[in-house]
Image (cartoon, rainbow, N blue to C red; front, side, top):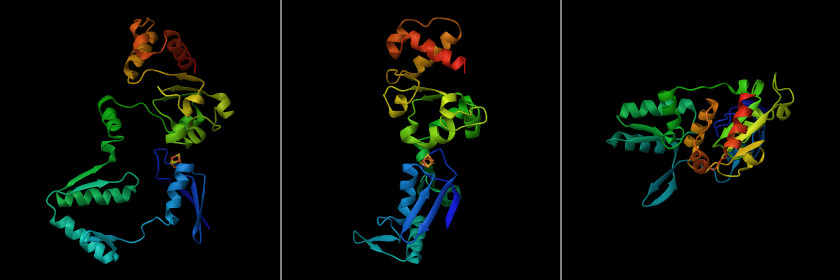
Amino acid sequence: MATKNIVCPVCGASCDDIQVELEGQGLTVRNACKMGNAKFQEVVSPHRIREPLVRADGDLRRASWDEAIEMTARILANSERPLLFMGSETSTEAMEVGIHMAEFLGGIADSNSTVCHGPTTMGIQEAGRVGATAGQSKSRADLTVYWGSNPLESMPRHMSRYAVYPRGYWTQRGRFDRTVICVDPRRSITAENADLHIQLNPNTDYELLSALLTLLHGKRPHQTAEDVTGVSISEMEKMLDMMKSC
Ligand code: SF4
């Protein structure tokens, strides 16, 4: 029997329509992209660690769950300032337990948000956020700008499920009702599939945004904006026209 509506834990798209069917040693996954499928296949992978391993005399040996839990508790209780670095592919409920545990132990709770999406949250706190649900982009968006992102490789179903290919209420013809702009120094696979690729020089996003803003205010950016960003003023105008007319 297939289990339906499972949330995929891999990327930020958090696809919630995954179907998984376990038959003997095999697993059939429906709706997930390659990345999602690979993650679910780990459940039946021969590489999966199915029981605790305890290091003794330099080597890892199998241990019972009771022994492993006892040992973990002892290590935590004897530590002075433990760091609980929790995985981003762990469930929210497990994270909550980890945070409570770190609090109880007087330790430090951290996660890979420190090196990943943490700055996003800091930016939102400092400057606010304009956003929409994925349903809004599916139903309404007729222009999608991928700026510094390559969803076809890092969030594979973003284009197919949420933003470019799906048929929405006001975007009945799917891709034919949408325009895609990709801003990226690399000729990524997403850029290849975009209607307009703005290939700016690396690390000049701020300068390009400033120039676009200047144009939006009806003024012409200084010539150095072209030299610095590697994007011609006419290309910037083209991009702005597409954005203003969507
Ligand atoms: S796009 Fe792929 S990896 Fe990301 S949540 Fe959806 S199925 Fe999982």
